[in-house]
Amino acid sequence: MSRLKLLAFTALLSCLSAVSHAQQPQAPTNKGEYLARAGDCVACHSVKGGKAFAGGLAMGTPMGTIYSTNITPDPDTGIGNYTFEDFDRAVRSGVAKDGHHLYPAMPYPSYAKISDDDLKELYTFFMKSVPAVKQANTPNQIPWYLSPRWPLAFWNLVFAPKAGFTPDSSHDAVWNRGAYLIEGLEHCGACHTPRGIAIQEKALDASGAAYLQGAELDAWSAPNLRGDQLTGLGSWSVDDLQAFLKSGHNDKGVAFGSMLDVVNNSTPYLSDDDLHAMAVFLKSLPATSNQPAYAYNDAAAKSTPGSDIYFGACSACHGADGKGQPPFMPPLAGNPAVLDANSSSLINLVLNGAEPLVVKGVPDAYRMPQFRVQMSDEKIAQVLTYVRGAWGNNADAVSTDQVKKLRPVTDPTSDQVIVLKMR
Image (cartoon, rainbow, N blue to C red):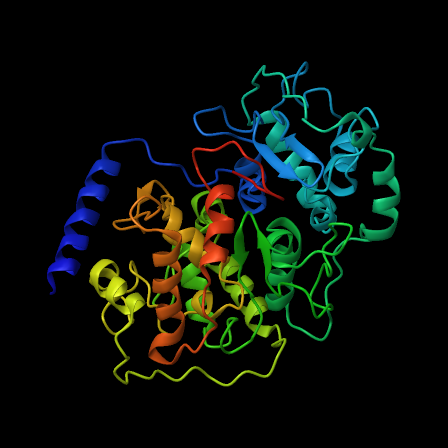
C-alpha cells in the first residue's frame, strides 16, 4: 500500500471513529421525509448554522439577490397556515398562498411532475414532522423597477409545464421511475440543462435534446449528463453512476460544486432501487455529438511551465500519469470535467478547492486544497493548460484572462453576487 493510500485509510478510520461518537444523520423515517430528501429541499431552504428549512439562503440572479423562504410549519413566518391546496399551488405551480408568483429559482417547473400522492406525503411531512421555526423571511434585494412579479404569470404561461409526469410506454418501470425522480423531485435539469434568454430551461425532460446537456452555474460548469464519450457520461456504466450517486465518488470522478449539496443532503439517503433507476435513466440519454472514445496516451510530454507546476503541486494526489488514486483522488486523464469545453469548474477548483463531501455524517478523507493565494492567474492557466493537453486529453488551453475573470467572482470572502450564484 502506498504511503498516500495508507494516510487516506488512516484518516478515514479517524473520521469513522469521530462519527461513531457523534449523532449521525438519520435515514428517512417516513415517506414524506424520504421525498423531501429526494427533492433536496434543505439545501436551498437552510443556511449554514441555521435551522433546517427556515430559509435565508442568498441566491443571486440577473435581477438581484433573492432569499429562500421559511418553509417550516410556523403559522406566522412559515407555511403553517397553508392548506394542502395552497401547498400544491406553491410547489407545482409557483404561486404562494397570498397569490404572488414565486421566482423560478424555486424549481416548480420540475416539481410539477410530482404525483398527487407524493405531494400529499410531502405536505404531511412538512406540517407534522418538521419543527416550526419562527424566523422572518429576509427581504429580497431587487431594484424596485424589477420587483413587480406579474410578468412571471406570462413566463409561466410560456415556459412552465401544463401537465405532470407521464410514463413513457416505450420504456420499462425502472426507466420510468428514474425519469420521474431525475426530471421531477431531484430537478437535475435546474443545474445541468442550459437556459435560454428568459432564464428558462431549454428542455424539461428526456424528449428534448438539450436536456441535461450541461450548463454554467455559479461559475461552475455543471457537467453534461448525456452519452457523449468525452465530455459526457458515455464511458460510465450504470454501476459507475449508481456508485457516484450513493457516495459522491467512483473510480472516474468526485462530486464538486453545487453537486456537493446533492450528495451531502439527498442521493445517499435514497434506496438502492431508486439510485439504480436514476442511473438507468441517465445512461439511456443519447449523446449530443459524435465523439470518439477517450484513448490514454502516456507519451512523454515536453517540459513546460505548466508541467513543472503540475509535478510540484498536483502529481502527489493525481499521479504523474494523471490516473489519480481513486475513488478519493480522481483521475484527470480522460475525466469529462477536464475535457469539458468550458473550463470554469477547473479554474474554480484550483482557485478555491473543494468544500467537504459528507456522506451520511462521514466526511471525506481528502479534498482538493485551494491555490488562490499560492498561484497567480498565469500559473493557474499554465497548469490547467498542461492538464487539459496531457495523457491524450487534447482539450483547449486555458488563458490567463479566463482565470483573471473568475478570480474575483468566486472569492469566498466576497459578497459580490454573480449570475445564479447559490453560495
